[in-house]
Image 1 (cartoon, rainbow, N blue to C red):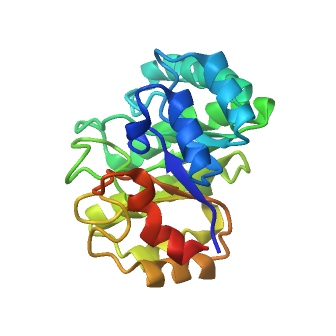
Image 2 (spheres, one colour):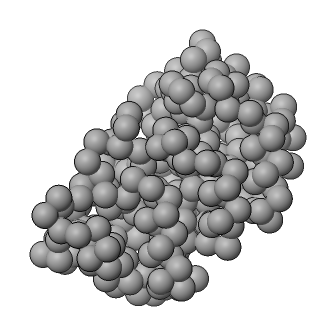
Amino acid sequence: MFTLSSNLEYMFKEAGDKLEDRIEAAAQAGITHVEIFSMEGRDLQAVANALSTHNVTLQSMLVDPRTMLVLRDTHEQFLANVRATAEQAIALGCKHLVCGSGTGAPFLPRAASLDIVCEAIDKAADIAKEKGLTLLLEAVNTRVDHPGVFFSNTSDTFYIANKLNRPEVKVLYDLYHSAAENEDVVSTLHTIAGQIGHIQIADFPGRGEPGAGELNWPELLKQISNTGYSGPIGVECYPTKASTVEALSYIRSLTQ
Protein backbone atom coordinates (compact mmCIF):
# COMPACT_ATOMS: atom_id res chain seq x y z
CA MET A 1 0.00 0.00 0.00
CA PHE A 2 2.72 2.48 1.06
CA THR A 3 6.49 2.42 1.43
CA LEU A 4 7.68 3.61 4.83
CA SER A 5 10.62 5.97 5.21
CA SER A 6 12.28 6.00 8.63
CA ASN A 7 13.76 9.12 10.21
CA LEU A 8 17.19 8.08 11.44
CA GLU A 9 17.55 10.98 13.86
CA TYR A 10 14.90 9.39 16.09
CA MET A 11 14.85 5.77 14.99
CA PHE A 12 17.28 2.84 14.86
CA LYS A 13 19.28 4.62 17.57
CA GLU A 14 19.91 1.21 19.07
CA ALA A 15 22.41 0.68 16.22
CA GLY A 16 24.65 3.45 17.57
CA ASP A 17 25.40 7.10 16.89
CA LYS A 18 26.72 6.78 13.33
CA LEU A 19 24.27 7.29 10.50
CA GLU A 20 25.93 4.60 8.45
CA ASP A 21 25.23 2.05 11.20
CA ARG A 22 21.61 3.13 11.44
CA ILE A 23 21.28 2.82 7.66
CA GLU A 24 22.56 -0.74 7.87
CA ALA A 25 20.13 -1.57 10.69
CA ALA A 26 17.24 -0.06 8.76
CA ALA A 27 18.15 -2.09 5.67
CA GLN A 28 18.33 -5.26 7.71
CA ALA A 29 14.81 -4.49 8.95
CA GLY A 30 13.57 -4.18 5.36
CA ILE A 31 13.42 -0.37 5.32
CA THR A 32 14.37 0.98 1.89
CA HIS A 33 13.93 4.73 2.48
CA VAL A 34 15.33 6.89 5.28
CA GLU A 35 15.35 10.56 6.28
CA ILE A 36 17.81 12.74 8.19
CA PHE A 37 18.09 16.30 9.41
CA SER A 38 21.62 17.35 8.49
CA MET A 39 25.13 16.11 7.77
CA GLU A 40 26.71 18.36 10.38
CA GLY A 41 29.49 16.43 12.14
CA ARG A 42 28.96 13.40 9.93
CA ASP A 43 31.06 11.63 7.32
CA LEU A 44 29.49 12.34 3.93
CA GLN A 45 31.38 9.63 2.09
CA ALA A 46 30.68 7.00 4.74
CA VAL A 47 26.96 7.77 4.62
CA ALA A 48 26.95 7.74 0.81
CA ASN A 49 28.71 4.37 0.85
CA ALA A 50 26.23 2.94 3.35
CA LEU A 51 23.25 4.08 1.29
CA SER A 52 24.75 2.53 -1.83
CA THR A 53 25.90 -0.70 -0.17
CA HIS A 54 22.52 -1.37 1.43
CA ASN A 55 20.43 -0.07 -1.49
CA VAL A 56 18.69 2.51 0.70
CA THR A 57 17.30 5.80 -0.63
CA LEU A 58 17.73 9.01 1.33
CA GLN A 59 14.25 10.48 0.99
CA SER A 60 14.86 13.91 2.51
CA MET A 61 17.19 16.15 4.49
CA LEU A 62 16.73 19.59 6.02
CA VAL A 63 17.94 23.03 5.13
CA ASP A 64 18.81 24.68 8.47
CA PRO A 65 15.30 25.50 9.78
CA ARG A 66 16.41 28.19 12.24
CA THR A 67 16.76 31.00 9.68
CA MET A 68 14.11 33.67 10.29
CA LEU A 69 12.73 33.97 6.77
CA VAL A 70 10.23 36.71 7.62
CA LEU A 71 13.22 39.10 7.58
CA ARG A 72 14.64 39.85 4.14
CA ASP A 73 18.17 40.40 5.42
CA THR A 74 18.36 36.67 6.27
CA HIS A 75 17.57 35.54 2.74
CA GLU A 76 21.13 35.65 1.42
CA GLN A 77 22.34 33.29 4.14
CA PHE A 78 19.30 31.07 3.64
CA LEU A 79 20.07 30.72 -0.06
CA ALA A 80 23.69 29.88 0.75
CA ASN A 81 22.39 27.17 3.10
CA VAL A 82 20.07 25.84 0.39
CA ARG A 83 22.92 25.63 -2.10
CA ALA A 84 25.26 23.91 0.38
CA THR A 85 22.58 21.41 1.43
CA ALA A 86 21.72 20.78 -2.20
CA GLU A 87 25.32 19.78 -2.92
CA GLN A 88 25.25 17.33 -0.02
CA ALA A 89 21.91 15.96 -1.16
CA ILE A 90 23.22 15.33 -4.66
CA ALA A 91 26.22 13.48 -3.24
CA LEU A 92 23.82 11.30 -1.23
CA GLY A 93 21.30 10.70 -4.00
CA CYS A 94 18.63 12.66 -2.13
CA LYS A 95 15.98 14.52 -4.16
CA HIS A 96 14.11 16.44 -1.45
CA LEU A 97 15.14 19.37 0.74
CA VAL A 98 12.87 20.23 3.65
CA CYS A 99 12.49 23.96 4.32
CA GLY A 100 11.17 25.44 7.55
CA SER A 101 10.56 29.09 8.29
CA GLY A 102 12.32 29.96 11.50
CA THR A 103 10.42 32.04 14.03
CA GLY A 104 7.93 34.74 13.18
CA ALA A 105 8.18 38.47 13.87
CA PRO A 106 5.29 39.74 16.02
CA PHE A 107 5.78 43.26 14.68
CA LEU A 108 5.02 42.15 11.08
CA PRO A 109 1.50 41.41 9.81
CA ARG A 110 1.09 37.74 9.01
CA ALA A 111 0.06 38.29 5.39
CA ALA A 112 3.11 40.47 4.76
CA SER A 113 5.34 37.92 6.47
CA LEU A 114 4.02 35.14 4.25
CA ASP A 115 4.84 37.12 1.14
CA ILE A 116 8.36 37.89 2.38
CA VAL A 117 8.95 34.19 3.06
CA CYS A 118 7.52 33.45 -0.38
CA GLU A 119 10.24 35.63 -1.94
CA ALA A 120 12.93 33.53 -0.26
CA ILE A 121 11.35 30.23 -1.29
CA ASP A 122 10.99 31.41 -4.87
CA LYS A 123 14.73 32.14 -5.07
CA ALA A 124 15.50 28.84 -3.37
CA ALA A 125 13.33 27.11 -5.97
CA ASP A 126 15.63 28.47 -8.67
CA ILE A 127 18.49 26.60 -6.98
CA ALA A 128 16.35 23.47 -6.64
CA LYS A 129 15.46 23.61 -10.33
CA GLU A 130 19.12 23.99 -11.28
CA LYS A 131 20.04 20.97 -9.15
CA GLY A 132 17.06 18.78 -10.05
CA LEU A 133 15.65 18.83 -6.51
CA THR A 134 12.31 19.56 -4.84
CA LEU A 135 11.77 21.86 -1.86
CA LEU A 136 9.32 20.54 0.73
CA LEU A 137 7.77 23.25 2.92
CA GLU A 138 7.02 21.99 6.42
CA ALA A 139 4.74 23.49 9.05
CA VAL A 140 5.53 22.36 12.61
CA ASN A 141 3.42 22.86 15.71
CA THR A 142 3.91 25.70 18.18
CA ARG A 143 1.81 24.16 20.95
CA VAL A 144 4.15 21.34 21.96
CA ASP A 145 7.47 21.30 20.11
CA HIS A 146 8.34 24.57 18.37
CA PRO A 147 7.04 27.66 20.17
CA GLY A 148 7.23 30.80 18.07
CA VAL A 149 7.79 29.12 14.70
CA PHE A 150 6.25 30.98 11.76
CA PHE A 151 5.09 28.00 9.68
CA SER A 152 2.74 26.71 12.37
CA ASN A 153 -0.30 25.92 10.23
CA THR A 154 -0.52 23.79 7.12
CA SER A 155 -2.33 26.68 5.46
CA ASP A 156 0.95 28.65 5.58
CA THR A 157 2.91 26.19 3.48
CA PHE A 158 -0.07 25.54 1.23
CA TYR A 159 -0.42 29.27 0.56
CA ILE A 160 3.19 29.58 -0.58
CA ALA A 161 3.13 26.42 -2.71
CA ASN A 162 -0.06 27.64 -4.38
CA LYS A 163 1.18 31.18 -4.90
CA LEU A 164 4.47 30.07 -6.48
CA ASN A 165 2.86 27.20 -8.40
CA ARG A 166 6.27 25.74 -9.21
CA PRO A 167 6.98 22.01 -9.55
CA GLU A 168 10.08 22.53 -7.40
CA VAL A 169 7.99 23.63 -4.39
CA LYS A 170 5.63 21.26 -2.59
CA VAL A 171 4.13 20.81 0.87
CA LEU A 172 5.46 18.34 3.40
CA TYR A 173 2.39 17.41 5.40
CA ASP A 174 3.18 16.04 8.86
CA LEU A 175 0.07 14.54 10.43
CA TYR A 176 1.52 14.71 13.95
CA HIS A 177 2.21 18.44 13.77
CA SER A 178 -1.19 19.00 12.19
CA ALA A 179 -2.96 17.12 14.98
CA ALA A 180 -0.90 18.95 17.60
CA GLU A 181 -2.13 22.24 16.13
CA ASN A 182 -5.70 20.93 16.41
CA GLU A 183 -6.23 20.93 12.64
CA ASP A 184 -8.81 18.63 11.09
CA VAL A 185 -6.35 16.16 9.58
CA VAL A 186 -8.72 14.54 7.08
CA SER A 187 -10.08 17.86 5.83
CA THR A 188 -6.57 19.28 5.58
CA LEU A 189 -5.33 16.28 3.63
CA HIS A 190 -7.98 16.76 0.97
CA THR A 191 -7.60 20.55 0.85
CA ILE A 192 -3.87 20.39 0.13
CA ALA A 193 -3.87 17.18 -1.94
CA GLY A 194 -2.69 18.86 -5.13
CA GLN A 195 0.39 20.32 -3.47
CA ILE A 196 1.56 17.39 -1.31
CA GLY A 197 5.15 16.39 -2.04
CA HIS A 198 5.72 14.19 1.00
CA ILE A 199 3.88 12.97 4.09
CA GLN A 200 5.26 12.28 7.56
CA ILE A 201 3.54 10.64 10.49
CA ALA A 202 3.78 9.99 14.21
CA ASP A 203 1.02 9.39 16.70
CA PHE A 204 -0.63 12.04 18.85
CA PRO A 205 -0.35 12.77 21.67
CA GLY A 206 3.24 11.90 22.59
CA ARG A 207 4.86 11.65 19.13
CA GLY A 208 5.33 7.94 19.56
CA GLU A 209 5.10 5.44 16.72
CA PRO A 210 1.71 5.01 15.03
CA GLY A 211 -0.36 2.90 17.40
CA ALA A 212 1.10 4.47 20.54
CA GLY A 213 -1.38 7.36 20.65
CA GLU A 214 -4.97 8.12 19.74
CA LEU A 215 -5.02 8.66 15.96
CA ASN A 216 -7.04 6.25 13.79
CA TRP A 217 -4.35 4.95 11.45
CA PRO A 218 -6.44 2.58 9.30
CA GLU A 219 -8.76 5.49 8.51
CA LEU A 220 -5.95 8.01 8.02
CA LEU A 221 -4.05 5.72 5.64
CA LYS A 222 -7.28 5.24 3.69
CA GLN A 223 -7.74 9.01 3.46
CA ILE A 224 -4.12 9.50 2.37
CA SER A 225 -4.68 6.95 -0.38
CA ASN A 226 -7.89 8.72 -1.38
CA THR A 227 -5.95 11.94 -2.06
CA GLY A 228 -3.99 10.09 -4.75
CA TYR A 229 -0.71 10.31 -2.83
CA SER A 230 1.39 7.21 -3.48
CA GLY A 231 4.90 8.22 -2.40
CA PRO A 232 6.77 7.04 0.68
CA ILE A 233 5.38 7.95 4.08
CA GLY A 234 7.99 9.18 6.52
CA VAL A 235 7.79 7.93 10.09
CA GLU A 236 9.26 10.62 12.34
CA CYS A 237 8.57 9.45 15.87
CA TYR A 238 10.08 8.66 19.24
CA PRO A 239 9.75 4.86 19.49
CA THR A 240 8.10 3.71 22.70
CA LYS A 241 9.19 0.10 22.21
CA ALA A 242 12.54 -1.51 22.98
CA SER A 243 13.51 -1.52 19.30
CA THR A 244 12.57 0.43 16.21
CA VAL A 245 11.58 -2.78 14.44
CA GLU A 246 9.07 -3.57 17.18
CA ALA A 247 7.80 0.03 17.20
CA LEU A 248 7.15 -0.09 13.46
CA SER A 249 5.35 -3.44 13.45
CA TYR A 250 1.83 -2.01 13.70
CA ILE A 251 2.10 0.63 10.98
CA ARG A 252 3.96 -1.79 8.72
CA SER A 253 1.13 -4.29 9.08
CA LEU A 254 -1.24 -1.61 7.79
CA THR A 255 0.89 -0.46 4.88
CA GLN A 256 1.98 -3.78 3.39
